[in-house]
Image (cartoon, rainbow, N blue to C red):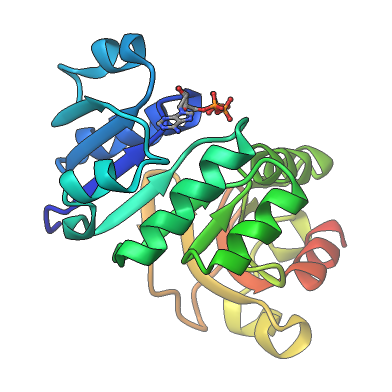
Length: 217
Ligand code: ATP
């Protein structure tokens, strides 16, 4: 994996988790937070940690923010600080901006500003958990877009002993199987004559409404 450089603005629970995960993956990570204490806590756990107020354009310019592959704006509670920081990043020409939104209005504002991606961590995680709890078969549900998701679920009884081709999942349901996990083994290019066995995990991609119906059936 190519080493990349990231700036994470806001060291709350979400920002800290993103920053530490990226560091563990071997990337260069700069964390910026206006709270000196948060910066001290992180200073020897990420590449650089700087105490600064990112609603000040000069600060972001001086830190060379346009040199980073991506900037994560992880300020949630202060709508003003999140929006102002995102506008400045956009105006300076940051390469890729991912901003966290707390409410629908917050999300709309960030979209209007033109950040590359808006995420709602609490809402999205809540949805994922609810989906996996609502069916005993679903282990994970990752939303790609409002319409499409990747889901991992335990092959139901009706599939046991059948071939992938024989189930006609694509033709009948518009669902594509991208991998099958049998115990420790994972088959990432499943073929039509591969047999589904009891305990297999199927990783599929498809339209949300189809997936939900398909897994419940
Ligand atoms: P989480 O839920 O991830 O814990 P949160 O949504 O509650 O976070 P906040 O606590 O509002 O988000 O903000 C996260 C961090 O952003 C805080 O540590 C805060 O000090 C920092 N922060 C807020 N405003 C600014 C700013 N203008 N410049 C730099 N950092 C800021």
